[in-house]
Image 1 (spheres, helix red, strand yellow):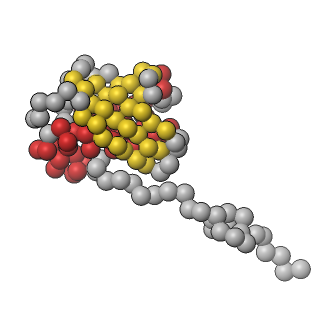
Image 2 (cartoon, rainbow, N blue to C red):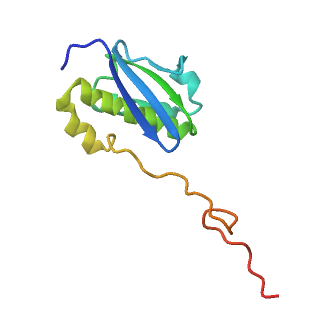
Length: 131
């Protein structure tokens, strides 16, 4: 493990973009200068954020400081998870196979499809009437 005080990484998902810093600590999660429990309304989102740390058993030795913008709550949680996974790989390259196998390093490319002209939405058609 590299002996550094701070590791930075960026994670993205849909329209959300997260800048993540990992620092030695006690396992606290701070998002946009707020405690993780106060930022996310659902416990599942906080659990999503902690998944990479729990996977490599560093959830009680590293603090997460994240700045996230754009998207919704789920997209933001998964963007932070992506950033944490990238930061863990930068911290210790031996963790990469474990984190990659869990699927946390893959940037989910799915995004909202654009609206097309002549239609009310991306794929929806106007109602057809014979007369």
